[in-house]
Image 1 (tube, rainbow, N blue to C red):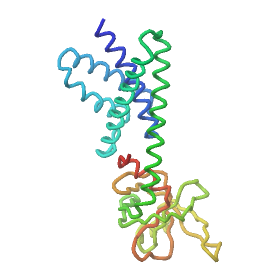
Image 2: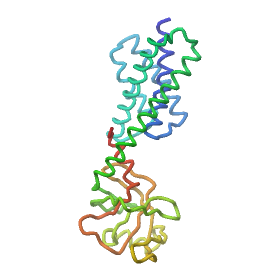
Image 3: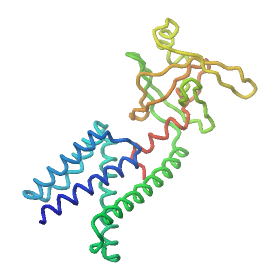
Image 4: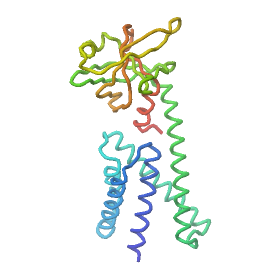
Length: 262
């Protein structure tokens, strides 16, 4: 009976915590991965519970790896920490409420619904905290290491976050990172030859609303070694004095969260 209770609680808690972690880091877990992660977690937990209970602490590492797929070490560590933190919060809150509200007398169905509501509230509180710190860091950190790849050609340098820059590409609806032509001569040559798909991007500056620049979508963009997706690159004629890339704040917003701030 004790083993069945342990397995039942593990199955329910793992499903709740995995869902909560997905909500917090804003990453959808494919149903196939979700089910495999739950099954593997349950099986490994059962074996370790009967053999070496001390090693149960390694199960979250395996569960997160299966559920969220390959991640770089930093992001993987942050996701595992969220799993542990949400697990501790959920277990602690349910234990306290069980003591004061006599949840043991509650029908199992209502108890599961109650646990789900508690998990949702905890996940929302973590999301709000993460957003707060993300905004703080977006204002306090302006310089980033940028690596721009377009096929086999790449350019590296310092990216500066311009908080007054809200440039968005009208074709794709994505934020735009601006780079001087002199920084991407090889890429620009391929664009002129038609080897790289590009289009014109209209923008305006003070005193002139008829500006245009060539825009394209990079193969890969790394900011502080974090992969950043859904970004358009605009090539301008003007060079920058103390940096190489001009970053729109929206581009770097996810980088601060990936560092595990908060």
